[in-house]
Length: 228
Picture 1 (cartoon, rainbow, N blue to C red):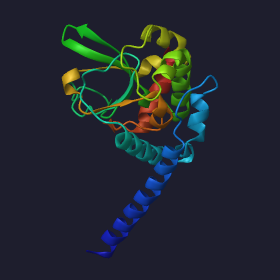
Picture 2 (picture 1 turned 180 degrees about the horizontal axis):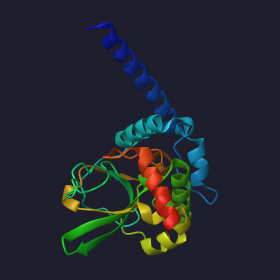
Picture 3 (picture 1 turned 180 degrees about the vertical axis):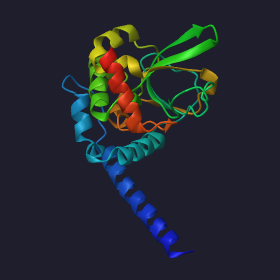
Picture 4 (picture 1 turned 90 degrees about the horizontal axis):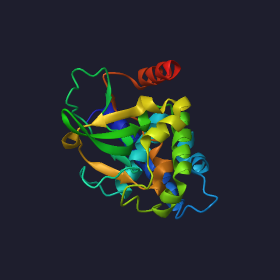
């Protein structure tokens, strides 16, 4: 093994140790309930990931979620849930200008199209970090009684009165519509259903964008918002 390989291994080991310490701190401070004064945006700002770079925040947040949430298939997801999942091979990936291979999505509904069933959702990765945090905070506040009820377990049945059209209208200025995407159910890989208790962690995940850079995606979001 060469000196450069040893140096790389040492850096990776040191990064893993640091990551584990950070995530242990996050686990120790994980909120156990969402009372009347609970604020998602305040919880986000208290998270150690808040001061990290997007790449480090993503690495930490993904590890925390995959370590603490049992993964499953595409079955039994219901409107109102936040799901992190694998979507490595979109059907039209050759035609797409870009796509996220690991979306983190507020699930809206399953809809029927001429090409079959599709999962409709709002992918939070298509927004700048600060805007993403504000949008998620707003969604939580809109449905706070429901998300408080299912704070640690996540919704088991469809969130009452969950209407994505209302959300898009309510968050029009934030450009919410830009992140609305359809996915083919049988192309969805592993799914992690993120309970509201961990939303302040999930907001730090970043997209695994293919064919375009993260910077380009945010530029497209800006252009779309100006047009709408």
